[in-house]
Length: 112
Image 1: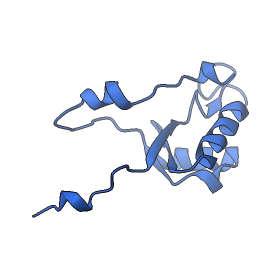
Image 2: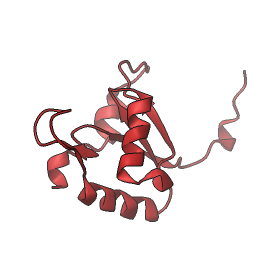
Image 3: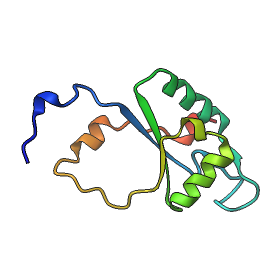
């Protein structure tokens, strides 16, 4: 296979991966205890980020793709979600230093 690197885009679209339990959906105690609620502050921030352009949002969950889809419906954000997936358990790459250099980490406490 021959790749013409000149045809590669200079900048790819930024991808946001959003976790479900404890991030998008909050629980009063442990996951599954009581009635959950959508993290509306986080959702508002995500909408603002996506409105800035050149971004897409994927929702992932350790509970799997079906759980992620249910969370998207529960939170009313299907209009801004590009896809749902189970949370990765293995990442295979020849250079994972990009993860520490380029991946921004945001924690739910930042969006009370």
